[in-house]
Length: 386
Image (cartoon, rainbow, N blue to C red):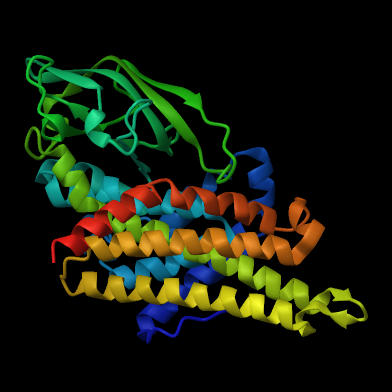
C-alpha cells in the first residue's frame, strides 16, 4: 500500500479505513465483471448511502455528515482504487447537484431533496454539456420559456453521468430569448426529476472506460417544469455552476489518484513475482527506476490534492489550485497506467490483469469536468492576473 504522508486525524483515518474496507469487500471483486457487463449492481448506491458516502459534505441538518474536504477525498481515493466507475458516481453526486442545491437553492428545495440525497434514496446528476456545447458551455441551446407557473423546456443534454438512474438532475438551460442572447449570463439552473412529462432518456454511450458508469443523453420535449424548481435567481445558473466546480475538480483528481495508485500497486506486485532471465523483474535497475518515477509522481499529485483540500476547508479561494490538482492528477494517472502496462508486457494488454482496465479508466479524467486544456486556461489566467 502506497500510504499518504498527510497527517490525519483519528476521524480522517477511520473514514479512510472504512472506505478501504468497503472498497476491498464490495467493489474490487466485482469491478472487472461490471466493466465487461457495462453496469454495476444497483445495490451499491444503497450501500454507499448507508455508510454516509453520499452525504459526506452536506451539513447535519439535512442528514449529511458535515465532514471536511480531505475526509471526502480520502474516501473517494479508496473507492476509485477499487472501481473507478463507482468513484465517479460518488464524485458527481457529492459535487455539483448536492452543492448547488445546498448553496443556492431555497429552504423548500433543500428540505425536499437533500436529506434523501444524503442517504442515497435519491441519486444526483448534473446536466450541462450538449452535443454542440462541451468546453464552450456558454453555447448551451436547450431553451426554457416561461408559461404561467411553469417553464417549458426543449432540448438535448449529452454526457450525463448517472443520467438514466438519477432521481435528481440539476440542469442548465437558457432562459434568455432568441432575440436577446446573453451568452453564459442567459443560463439558469433547474432541478429536474424523471417523472416530469416530456423527460426522456436517450442514447447510452458505449465508452472506452468507466464502462460500469452509465453516461447518457437526455431529451426534453416540451417538458413542463414547475417554476419553483429553478435554483436561485434567473440567469445565474452558470455562475452557480462555476462556483461549485471546485468540489467536482478535486473529486476527479482524487479519482485519478486512486486509479494511479491501483496501477502502481499492481505493477509492484507483478514485477516482484514475475521472473525473467532467472531474476525477479524488480531486481533490474530499469524496472526499479520506472517504479520510482511512478511512485514519485503519484505522491506529488496526492500531496497537491491534500494541500488544496486543507486550504479549501480554511475558506481560501482554491479555484486555480483545484484546476492544478485535476490537471496534475489526471495526467499522472494516464502516465502511470501507461507505464504499468509496459511493465506487464503482453499481459498488460489483455483483460486477465487489471492494468488494461485502469488505463482505459484513467483517460477520461483528462477530459470530463473540464479538459486538461480548459484547466490550463484557468491556471494561466490566474497566473497572469497576479
